[in-house]
Image (cartoon, rainbow, N blue to C red):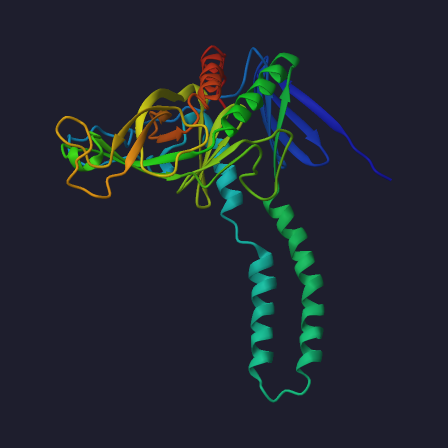
Length: 362
């Protein structure tokens, strides 16, 4: 027979909930409440409130600084430990605690199994090798399945969003705008930039950009395997980090370490840039002109070079993500304006957060 009970004691603005799963605490104002309990975090989103604030002393200096002309300007965020804003400290502490745990499946299941199999196979004159392999694998399979259940309990984390009708409509637009970004044929991450005076050998370009294609773009990707949530989480996988776009904040993952920044603390600038394309032309690129790999003083082709390719000048969109905590990433799209609506929407969410009344959470 199943049983359940739940009792709440309200001590405004705090509330304590008692249930068979444990004791949970919530803090917030009307329309803006965060609940933290043994199973995870619950965020209430409405037009009047989004989240909470935790005050910490000290300030963090942004990592990106203006470099002298001619030097290589690295385009990279600060150390992952510095990126989290004060509003996300509690959430990130819990998430990093979960992600730092070692899996019992690998440590106590797969690793010992591989060791046993290696020992058995290394004995060349073993006439019962086949039987021993079958018996060993058969014994380890139940152990591995049991360890997998144990791992699920250890790593499982809930992140549930309770949205009112108005915020549900806002969230639907959030996903729609990201789908428009997905249509871009190519998406790049800028790694560094450098000004140059050698226009002749650089197709007339005064600025050299080192870029790489992003590792992937997904409509829904979980930041950790056993995260339970009731929303889709869009993700952009860069060279050295993953950007997860939660409804209220940007979640950043580098290795197994996380950071988070609320949208109200993120600045996004976007431009249309003329880019000399030396690679294959993306299908959605807007060509605005042409040049040559080697140009003469007048800007025409330098006839001294036999293999002087004609290159397209494309209108690409660039999006610069920065924060006072040290976030600094530049994403470029071949589709002109592919990320405009999504970037604008994130800024609108940030503006809504700025107008929200926040309460302090320990």
